Length: 333
Image (tube, rainbow, N blue to C red; front, side):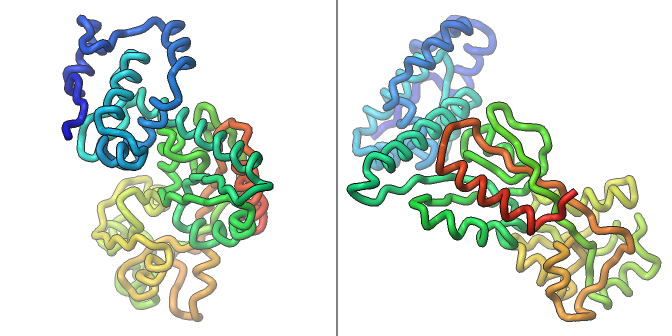
């Protein structure tokens, strides 16, 4: 079956940006008209958008929703006409445009409200589960977040955790992909509340042999430029923040990428390179396995909890568990 295409994303974007004659029923709207039309969007159109983005294609979404591919295409076509914007980039996999991300967030908020309403209505008849999607940085996830959430999952709440670096995790809040996030950003995302959790303490560490070979005179710009560095992934910014604190410059060392917290710490302890290890993990290794590379106080990474401004008992339950656990797990001011 052929997916509805309409105008190509490029031509549609040109039409919207330049104000040229709209095609295929899509036209620019005045702000007050757009607001009224968004409030009038049929819920099945929003659910179609959510399903297409989550499943990655029109065909897969149609199967999940038990409707024809032409029917789901028509819903998106009607939605785009309703708001006057292209909402889906017809790529592989499909992606939401900027307007589509705003509507995707609205769709997920409606889904959450529906699930909680169903849970309350059906609680006396059968079990009903509310799904809460959150973003957590790797060190928190493997260190203290899972124990914090253990009591939560016994309350008919299903947790969908997305792992993302704390410096970019708010992207998923802005796009509507997540309802809450542990983040290093201290500015609230629009439409979200923010609570400071505390700070994670990190030590620059390496094996004694690695330190003797690569840092005989300590952490200098020259040695940091050539000493192998262990990174979590290419989004990991923590080591660079530490390096700039010492050298005031950006260096380009050889790097190893190890994308799990436990694996990362073990790679450092096995001599792959140096890296920043949480203080609790550092203390867990046998004596003389690792040495601190800097006599300075540990690097403190402030963490914040941001969540949608939405009346949601399930989301509030998750937030309370995270905030309570952070009081003991993190360094408090």
